[in-house]
Image (cartoon, rainbow, N blue to C red; front, side):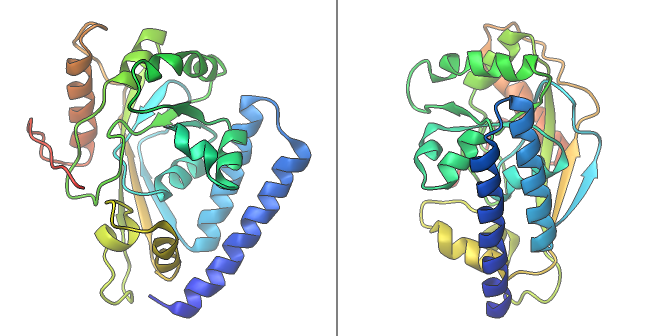
Length: 259
């Protein structure tokens, strides 16, 4: 990791936030399509300036839901850079200084995790996004991992998407690091996971890395669920397998948990 590179990119990233934040403040896009387009441009330029490349297999669906494993805050930027889309996030993000306002303006659908019926409350927003013809991206694990395995999938949002009649397409994301990064690793310095990691120092270290590559795989077809809408557990299991197969993750009934 290069300290000079971290400082330089931090300055560029701060300027990037100011520029696009000012655009939001002035234009205040009112439609979901306009907000998704703003986020797409923001993410595309951010990755270019950070020197992060994306390698894609398959096609990003133009509609319906996309589900993926979850490794880092970078995941959102990577998917948003590929095409205009809308994300589902925990409601606490809305209260983050600056970032919360920007994610709200970008059209994020919020879910109050840990509260009964939270996914059902988000259904109206999900339906509005899907009816607008925008893909919805969310991470059924509900938290991030270091990439060594996948957590079990939560069933609430999956059930709500299926209830709207929307399709669900699996995707898998992983990161690679180029040479010249010392003892830095993907699991510790690119992935952001575990309660012991502090966000800002992690971002500063990430900005000092070189040769970061995101690899995204999309399934060729939406998931063909075999279960009825009421069988949420089976739905979550089938979705987990679909994502795991894309990433060649061991598709057993046991998943690895990280804390």
